[in-house]
Amino acid sequence: MNSLISIPTNSTFATVLEGLLDAVLISDIQGEVLYTNLSAQKICNQLNLTHLKNHAIWSICELLKSYTDRSLILESELTIAEIQYRIRVQWLNAQAEAEARDNRLIVRFENQQHSLRCTAMVESHNFGLTHRETEVWELKRQGKSRRDIADQLFISIDTVKKHLANIKIKREAHFN
Image (cartoon, rainbow, N blue to C red; front, side, top):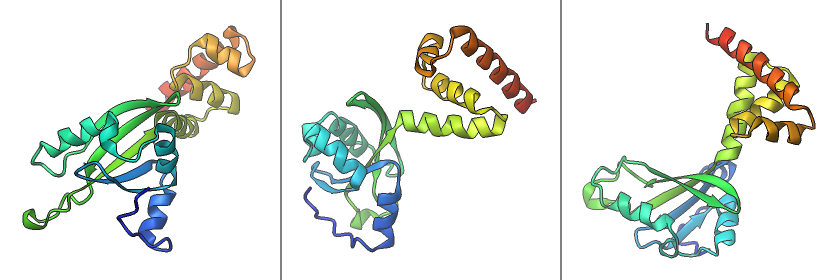
């Protein structure tokens, strides 16, 4: 990666960027990749990406550049190596003064499967689900069919149905 943005590895900013679950890439307005955290480096390596103009992601960046509202965040979805990502593109510094604009873009890649798993874990806690119900709920939140859940957890479809019925009761009790 071309490291035009110099971020000291011991800085708080670098620590925050590396600690994020999202992959983070910073680009200039010509599409040159200036910085990537470790997660984004892996994605860039998978895509053989050194310049955003060489990828569909650039169309989102181009669209963002066409708007005058610098607080705007544009989103899209992209599948990379069978993993679904939500892509968010925004200006690195939306509050930059008009005459001294920061013309760098930040591109974030959110792993949708991981996000759904985390959401399911929080919901599991909130609904008071058992360990097995949590496993079933995580897979259901990922859009898996009853058959897929049964196959993955080595249980019968009837057992999956029973768990889903219990989950429904616990969810309804939580919201009432």
